Amino acid sequence: MMKRLQYFNAVVEAKSISEASRIFDVQPSSISRQLAVLENDLGVRLINRNSRSISLTEAGNRFYGYSKQIVSELDEAKRVVNDLQAIPKGMLNISTTVGFGEAIILPLIPAFKAQYPDINLRIEISERVVDLIEENIDVAIRSGSLADSSMIAKKLSTNDFVLCASPRYLKENGTPLVLEDLANHLCIKHGYAGWGSWFLKGEQLQKIEIGNAMEINTVNGQKQMILNHGGLALMPSWAVKKALLDGELTQVMHNHSFCPHGKDTSVYAVFLRRELISPKIRVFLDFLKDHLV
Image (cartoon, rainbow, N blue to C red; front, side, top):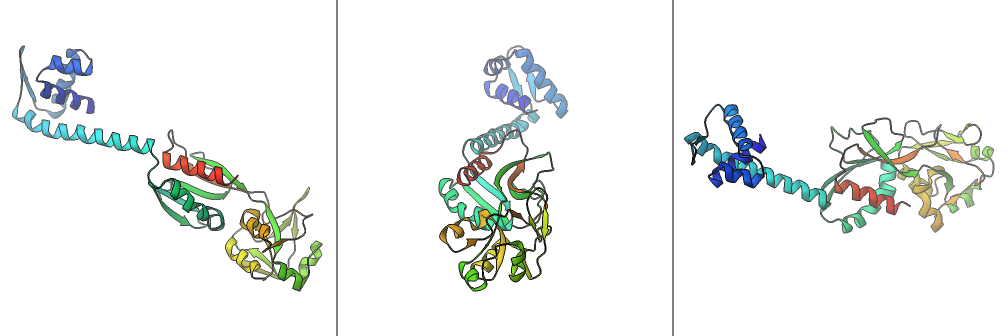
């Protein structure tokens, strides 16, 4: 239909089918056939033709105004879309888990905005699993594995865990050296579903029995608890890396490898599988890759 409208407009403006055919580099007969199909679809004659000239009917004159506007708006729409593909801009909708979002994603946003000022951001921080299509989410930050083949997952970080506490807590309560020592400490567990237990990693996973425990359902909540000398916590290394380097926290039982889940997990950036990834999504993924090395 759009090609027929373009042919029709060209014939009207050039006042000649043969001239319109030269503009589009097609045979005059092709223009004539497409005009005939257009008139048949509309059920009305648009152009009066003879061997030497053409003229618009009353219906054709009225239709031309609408046709010209439709083609013009389509050209404008194509230009806008092409601009979006060339320049990263527009609204970028991000959904992220609470722990990784607060510890890693949010601190990177000011630098990302400085680099890409034409990209606006809407960020949801939640543990719920979002529907990317229904909720118009461009990128979701998730822990676990990808099951839906309609999506693509880019690995951002491995969930490696360290057992740690503040130096003051360890000074006042002693440093655990073996698993049995944990019974004498307040152990802060993650209240998120499926992450509440502690396991010792080895040839086989060994569940650690902890009697004196407190549950907190966010990574940042656990971190604040141990920073304020409230006990021991099994923390993802990405959440406490800086605090460990600064000496605010101390890792204990280095010779053991722990996890709060029955299997190893990672953090992924998930987005819909599309033939073309929009520039705003592409530059955001590249930015995360460059800054999470």
